[in-house]
Image 1 (tube, one colour):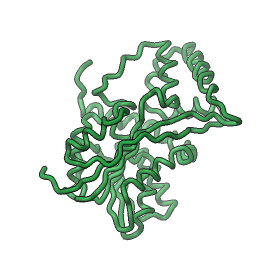
Image 2 (cartoon, rainbow, N blue to C red):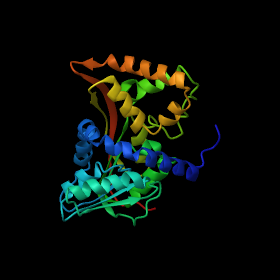
Image 3 (cartoon, helix red, strand yellow):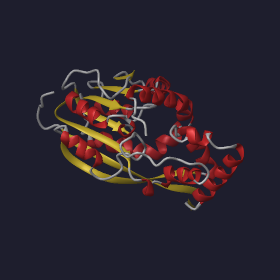
Length: 289
């Protein structure tokens, strides 16, 4: 595999997430219903309270940044960063609709943060760090901008075997086209999925490990058709794979995905298990950078 060019990769990510931003707005109610427990978990694990200044990395269409802004109140503030201006435009509309004036959305590459040392009481991030080209560099910078006593609370995907929500399309597509085995050192959905992956990186930056826990949930759909539409529209990493399929292959792939998903039917819903790693670390003392 050729070496990763970080600047080129970041630009590709920006384009990918801008492309799917309208779909994330379309599916906003679904996302809130199925992922709100992770948003609340991160806000709680970061020990947010009134008056705090909080940084959200990879905020997408607004969460958990908006929840954090509500938690810290008018005396506090939230800075929320994402590569995609399309995603941030959705986030701004949502914050405006809620009357929030203590949140600022900025388009930034979060690998290196444009803030002074000890700028934030807490850093939160959901489903972001595993996509970065240089995770140790990014976590080192997170440690730099955290105040002493501040918390980093992060959610990343757990292993593929515990996430049929994401695993099923990959398994089915792989039967029709060749998909290279992911390089564990390259960005990807399951890059930080194992116990100790992210915590080990955090502790090397001087942060003190607090929690490295698997948290399970379910993603609910009315039908297999709804699931298929959702995953095809929302999952930027899967779209290039669907695009490689011929028209005939695409029909077969979609039919097989729906058959696999229907195995998770429970009553009038399809309940697909999801599992995440919630990793929390604390900056106990000032460090030199």
